[in-house]
Picture: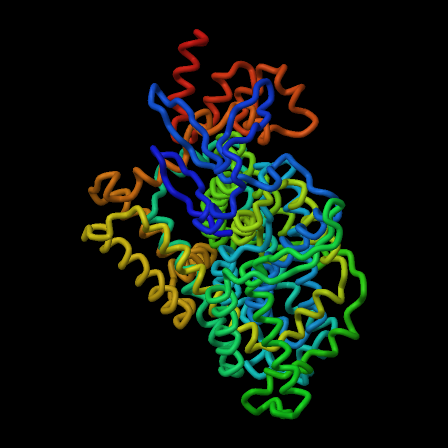
Length: 640
């Protein structure tokens, strides 16, 4: 099912597509229990609310399972596995991109261990976020926002990989100086680099924890608009084109085949449904048609391309000499990892050693932290809209950002060489399946933890041919770039002011980091630590472009409508205009909420929900009006 997000009287809403409206049951109305009373809701999900004397109609999608509902256990497991498969592409991309820069080289067992660790931490992060964070059904996983700063840190002279290009791809490479590939000496080389990224992620994530639990996120968002977000997110994808082209160049025909397959499955066949068996107590064994190509385009395309490479390998169509072009399209290049990797391996904190901290790496990671926070806030509102829930109140947003900072610290402690963020693709899957159950996503978190403990699972992904991975990179990084540019939808692109900011931010965000990478140690202020900080920041595309866009957008004259700020801030709306007050309970904390409701001091903690009076709950519902609402509440309660 396709969904269309539209604006009605400044309120975000979700419409079913035309095809879905035709499939809607003919019943005109249905009753939904809203706690103390029942409200009549039209079958297409329309709600009528009063906003300051104005009658507002909000259209919401009808869900098969809402946030607080739990499907049968067998269906819950199947839907959870679907979320796992949806997050698969993004999860494996991060370690595959970092492998070269971490100097993992031919240590395929080590790479499989890093993959397993990322799956494990993603599961823990998902459970924490859905239970104690924003409490929406959002899957957490590895983030692309940390890739650019991590690569910038690893490109510093002190961390550059001692192996040459051949050693990074030739599994038979050996060196007396660095020991045998996969041996203790070689493992220490890449583990020392992971420890540097670990420390940077953990310290930088403390900033995210502070921003979230202190309630400063609303203040930060006040100064950030589309012209700051667009270059920041777009440059994440644009700065990674080297990684995509390097993998794809191992066999361009296989890479292009992968791109074509992804295009066909995700675009041309997206509305084609496939009969799938199902069982219900009422109907017994039956068949239902599912949009398989829309649900798993990346997985299906990579699977088909993988099979093609396997057939070409078996029939001898690919060269067997590592020096020949096309060799790395073979499926047996790293097949030994399947026998060497253990069946079970439990990741644990400090498994690579004690993390190290340097100021340059920490400041570089702060750029990734900021980008990740902004991306997650957008996912919170999108997820609430697609699940038919009210927009998240300010305490839920603050708590979600704070918990995400904690999960990034966990990711650093476990040694993923990355952080965590909310996965937009899983949010989109909710709109397709109409299943917004929190329990389903929590089950997906458990599956991620279990998969992370199975060493053979990570080993299997390592054997994927490089050109197949390169084709996936081309599509995925292109989509990240497009998502970043899509933030410009509310900006007046006919304004020369906006065009100047956007063009300069993107071009300088690409050219300056490229020059910094080719001219090492050109920053010489007399302080080595400060030089490293500046070098890392100027080598990070998303920082250069995002900071320049932020600076120019907030200093050059321009109206709120021209900058896109006006419609941008309309995303944060009063949930009492959107749904019944009882729906806000989905953001309450489990088990302890009834005790918090009895405490007056909770009103002073911006990350805790309170229910001392209906006005207080309303005050916490809008980031944009938080300060105004607080002053109003102070006057009403006569508190000095």
